Amino acid sequence: RLFCCLLNRLGHNFHISAQKLKGEDTNLQQFVVKMKPKDKDIIKPQDFVKALVDNGHKISTCPRGATTTFGASFCVKENDGSWTTIPTAFFLQSGYESAKGKPAHFFMPHSGLDMDITGPLVGPNPDGTAGRCNIQYYLAIEGMAGWHSNHNSDVPWIRPNDLQNPYKGSEMFRSVTFAAMAALTLNTIATDMSLPNGGYGLTGVCNDTCAVLEVAMCGTTNCHPISYSGRFLMHTSRYAVNLATALSKDRSFKSESEALKRLA
Image (cartoon, rainbow, N blue to C red; front, top):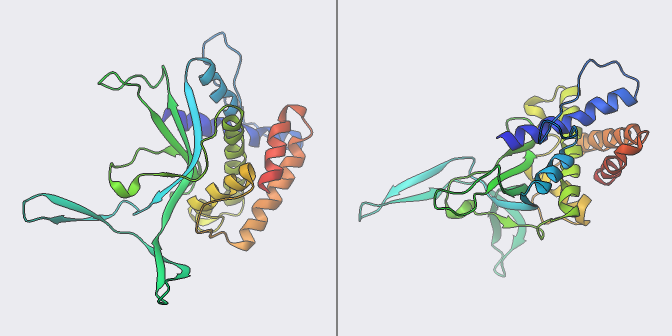
């Protein structure tokens, strides 16, 4: 939860910076993180991740997808007294048919950008092995695009599948920048337009936010289905372009401006 809160708060700093560059009045102060009391201020999420790496952490990101049941399942008692858990999922038409003309259906998936963290702040497991913190960026049904905890129940159908090769090094830092810019765009549009549920279902759902990052990073996506609404997709694209223009006035935001252009 701490990693999520810090990354989300640092991502909001770009909104404050854009307001100032546009000449708008704002009393908001930028959120600052320090790894040590005498270290320099960290105001960008990718710089925070870099600081973690510099302080002995190993971090990678990767777009991943898994079947979603929205937390619901059935339990069936077997003859031997054991219990079998059966997922309850939403079935969708894939648009494909078998050779006999029967439609092929599939479970609604959940997708997002995973971040895997190991290192001093995560600590070891009780058995002495390296502990792992896993968080994920996506637009949640609760109404916020950002980083969320990604610790799930240990059941077979929630085991994630990599949609791309994991991002490491400079590509990993780049993906953190893209996630921050995408979250800022989606959350601002939802707030300015007073969209219900933070825009969930209108500006997209989890799969859409993951797909946009994939396309921006790799030029293609393995997420399915894509359910963006055309009207709100135009709003988010227009805002991303305008934000890129505002941030381009300050050379220190060059990478963020370029990320917004690719996301648009």
